[in-house]
Image 1 (spheres, rainbow, N blue to C red):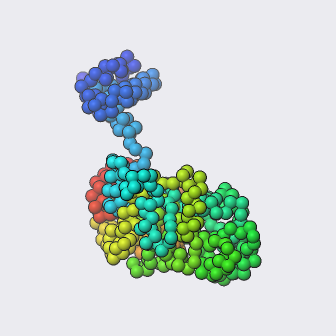
Image 2 (image 1 turned 45 degrees about the vertical axis):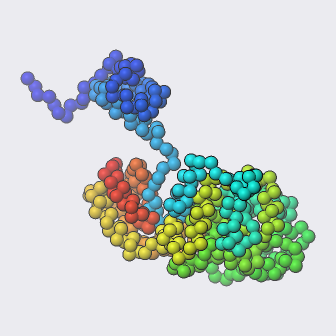
Image 3 (image 1 turned 60 degrees about the vertical axis):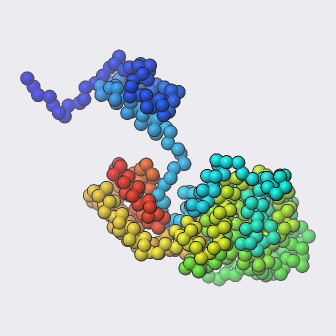
Length: 480
């Protein structure tokens, strides 16, 4: 009698052996799935899976094991798990960019998270005046603290900074001229350009100066009866060096006031405190800009400020009043979750001595390189083991960046893990790195690094210490 060949193909099954939908649904193994997902979803998943099995049977490729009860339950269960996974997922940001636009920018501190949970699960005074019992103004929830932090007379909040600029222009400069230096006609992510926003807002752009040099006389010569404002745009996502000159806010205010023209400043990322006290590069603060004579300042809530996505406009009360009366304000306003998150973040700024500890963004930006290096060294053995002999893993010094257009030429000393493909050269080397980068993105909690200089770089700056265990535990699921 011939012994069975252990390397032979598994037994095949025919289409007649595939059970009916009703029989599968009545299997005891399916009771937990029905309790979790409901009969509608499970029935659809079973029908789809059985249709796939029939197609395999017709092709003569259906394995007998695939129609066993336990395998049917496992396959349908996996299908339901995959289908129910949320599209917006938690990730590990090891890209080296702290405020990564594509990964959601600023992470909220615990105080903001708890406030959002409360706002989601109970009614709140979003537009209800608790003193009078009448209708309130949602901006009032953050107005007092923003006035205190910026020195502005009034504030309003919309859904992002591009909306803030658009609303300001539409409310104050529709069918009028706005004078901007050519060196400040920036393009932000997604090909959104200042001239395009201005055109959509109904304002006429008047360019003055040159790309690298603009003088006070350029603005003065452009002002006329049709001028609504002198607008200064903070070049947060690029830098021009060499033979350059620009006009500061104070000089613009001196030009504009006698002529009845407003001075507005788009600070972009916007910061409320001097960053140099934490060893970070200098960035103009909102308070400084107001003090220098800006009538209105716009900035983001989810960049250097470290809060939720929103656009904030602060400045003169009469101009803010006109902006709030614009019908577009309602279309661009923020909801209760944004305001719930914004207020506790702003309150952290009232105690600046604790800010680097309590504000997540500032804590990540100011992490000491020695601390990050120690973390990389703890992770290195686990990653080496997961990659076996296919890749070389080394701990190396590297540089992070702030991101989201903030301080584009400044880098932060950091440390992390560098992965290089073994025994591969040329295109094979590149394909091996692409395969590894893709495998990391396909983990239960995706890991995002960056490929540069023939290696995959994993910067540990944004990996919190309490996340190390979950990062390591899922490495065993790497599929290369």
